[in-house]
Length: 480
Image 1 (cartoon, rainbow, N blue to C red):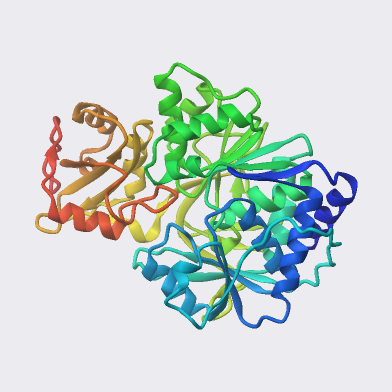
Image 2: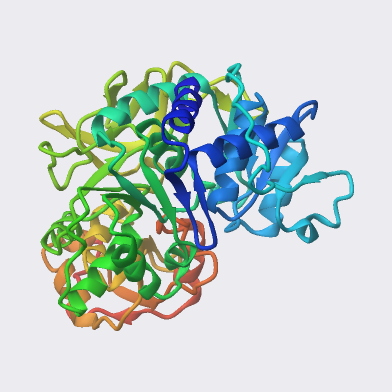
């Protein structure tokens, strides 16, 4: 992270009055940002224990992230999209004693916590101290069990990731990054805070656009792209699909200013990637996980192969062990909080293969379905076919306990005919074709994670609790 703070100090000296970050209510120059970070770091000096960040996003979050890191603290985001129970678990598990927040009332029942306001523009300019190194961040992943697990990321992991991604994105001072994904997610911290600072680029936050991920209206997302005219952004497949659907419906195209749109966090159907490119979105799919500092492979300009997640990042080694993707190199996490250190070779739990030097993701190993006829089915193989429809945010294939029937849950933001879904699945072999469909939307409690992937435990409960609509073309008996 030293390069981030050296770049911030340099931008503050050379371009003190240029805008560095902008959100819905404020702007901050490079000089103001450096001063605010140093001022908050001073107020955090002497504090023991982990520091939580209880902010939704924007400039205040940037200041809190940088200040806790500059002070050498262990910082822990408290995601606004986690439940109160999940964040309570994080507070206890990470032994957080201090929280940077603008909403102290949220923590009123926890008098043992020290609450600190992120502050405003410092009245007196303060020079940025050198970064001493050694800070860590703990990123909690919302597993299907509901109990988040803390991934420890330090300087080694971030420095390696920033070095590799800087060459892929090739950002410069002329770039504007539109930040849509929540800053509590490691990937957006990297792409929305650290890489723009290193490049001297401007970042713009639009929180109403972020709400689109959680089922909010798509219009604020469209307005953000039209108003900001960004050159780069990072999206999850679900929000990319909603954007493509809206552009297609309006017979519109993405802003010509865009030069690099990364999509990750979940698998994207090749048809969605092609539809996005046809709408003028220069989309590049990547792959990663928090345990490997967010990014393992990425398509890049001039080397973009839809259907793959691109070449492996420089400095990493990816191998396949009985089809499972393993990763070794400097981005592999320190370990899980309150757990053992990470092994030198990380088993991702994802299945994949290579096409040339490009990695292809085949699905989760633990999501594999085994039918009563003994057939192995990767649900992602089936789900991608319907997820390519921009009206469909996500889907989840599962087996009904009572009879072993394959049922597909479809999460849509617009009306989709059963016949359309049937057509998407028609080229599947009989044994992989679902017998019924359950249609729902993004308001279904707990069904989707923030990146749009299905919570398979919730999906399984729905499959066993609700009636499914029959497909128009019924598959033959699974046993046949």
